[in-house]
Image (cartoon, rainbow, N blue to C red; front, side, top):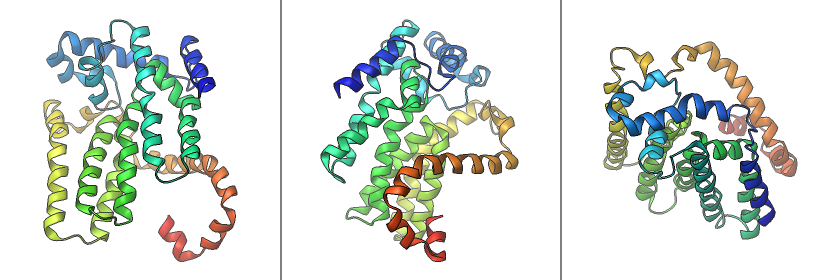
Amino acid sequence: LLIILIIYFIGFSLREISNGAAHTDLELHIWKIIIDFKADFNYSFKNYIDYEEGTLPFFHLFQSFVNPFTNNIIEYGLSNTIFNLLIPIIFFLIIKNKIDTNVAFYISLILLISPWFRSTSYWGTTENFALFFVIPSLFFFEKVINQRNEYVKNNIFLIIFLSLSIYARQQYFFLIIAHLVILFYNKYSFKNTILFFFIYFIFSLPGLFTLYIWNAHENIQVSTSNSEYISFNNILNNVIIISNILLYYSIPFILLNFKRIFKLINISNFIKFL
């Protein structure tokens, strides 16, 4: 732990950029938004599209009005470097009841040597912020899938954390789609189903209000600076690319569990897995 923490902070002192573009994301987009939000929030929020940022401003609002260390970029980066240390702690606290405590401890430390996690922490970009909500989401997702007791409470907590996840990082919207599938698959009572959708609706109101301020109802392209990249062809291309990335990172788990996986290979199970 001590060695990894030392290496982690050495990376900050060396201004490590392991993911290749964290510094430009901060300097060209994120830092400008944070400063302008503090100077003139109304004008900056209404003209958010001008900053060419690809996510909703949940992270930027947090940094502008909650993080007290935004006087300069170095101070800001260090505050995020320290703040993001909570993520492996949260991860450990959640998985330690599922597996051996020592194993959970070592697994949680892997985050601190992840090039993407490190660069995002050092430069205060948006990616890691979502993990504060995604990790608890997966915890409650597992409970909902396995139909644990208190399934109403588990679904409510899942909805809350999933909603915060996509406000922080819209790429996690697929988890909400998965949850909706599970809601119908489990055939909850009509009363509970209505309750779950009502909570989703309540948590969607800030996003809907934001889109209204941006006049997205007149021109959907103002909802994101990356709208020109949204196309069916790009979706098909990314399915291939992302599948290869997932395969690469799954190789150790496949090798360690090869016999169990081999037993599961039949058409029915494969379709369910897919």
